[in-house]
Amino acid sequence: MILPALVQRDVSLTHFNTFGLPARAALFAAIETPEQLAALIDLPEWPSVPRFILGGGSNLILSGDFPGLMLQVRIPGRALLAETADAWLVRAGAGENWHHFVRWTLDHGWPGLENLALIPGTVGAAPVQNIGAYGLEIAERLQSVEAIALTTGEATIFDRTACRFGYRDSIFKREVAGLYLITAVTFRLPKPWRPLAGYADLTRELAAQQIADPTARDIADAVIAIRSRKLPDPAQIGNAGSFFKNPLVDAATFARLAAHYPDLPHYPQPDGTVKLAAGWLIERCGWKGRNLGPAGVYERQALVLVNRGGARGADVLRLAEAIRISVQAEFGVELELEPVVL
Ligand code: EPU
Image (cartoon, rainbow, N blue to C red; front, top):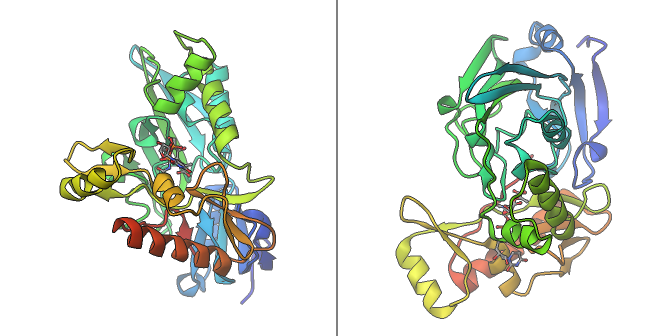
């Protein structure tokens, strides 16, 4: 196979995943423009090469080497598309760093993404798992997703409804998983801006700072303070953020659990189910701060698994499985992994 200059062979992925897991890609290409992708799609070998799309690698567990072509999205660009009476429309290239993008919107006086400050990863990955934190999910601010179909090279636009957003979920994780490469995302930041400060940790942090009437910048600063306290910085300790989704249980299961555990944190959902805090369940099983080989449970947030040094994907997955079994045995609740396992 004759490869374009863009494609490298046998590339280490250790620095391309925030868990710092060792793995190699047989082929690797950094995509900075849609035209570069089009050139790859035109190759005669393209249909037979397995591929995987990489953003910031912040929600990824590499269980071993990847035998195909790893496409790392580095498409840049940020712009205000329009300002209307009721919103700012802001577009960013999929390769932009998410937090830098949030900071840039705030610097320009376009609030609306402040609750999602300091989330690792890229703009293009944000809609894939519908990133959310401190009372806001990206689904609520998203206008459209631009993507290229990997089979045909055709450009497509997904509006918000077409993205089929759910809790840490979208069409890009399910029906069309692996079929599109997201090139850009447009956000709708509504006017008038109102603070979203109802999430318990955020309310507490603003009160502690004696801020009664927060600006968007105050909220971003409070979110950054909470995240920095509770979540490990991937530059220092390898991790992929929350390792499990917060489980949804039916009302009868919740009633049974609440009778045994009166302090069980719970969040009733519009459809009658109840969301539980996986971190609390894991902590109650005694896992917080514990290690299994080189993988561990972060001492300040039990929902986060960490690389204590030299962990491989298998070590992390072994720890995750032990935790899943404990929580199932103690509470009868099934935990589901949040990151993508490759
Ligand atoms: N809790 C414990 N022990 C722990 C961790 C949490 O008892 O070790 C309890 C807390 O006391 C609280 C409840 O669990 O009552 C919820 O904790 P927290 O507010 O820290 O949030 P979370 O449910 O653990 C979720 C998201 C995070 C997001 C925060 C804030 C998921 C899977 N995780 O965590 O997202 O930052 O809420 O909104 O929904 C991520 O997805 O990677 C992520 C970090």
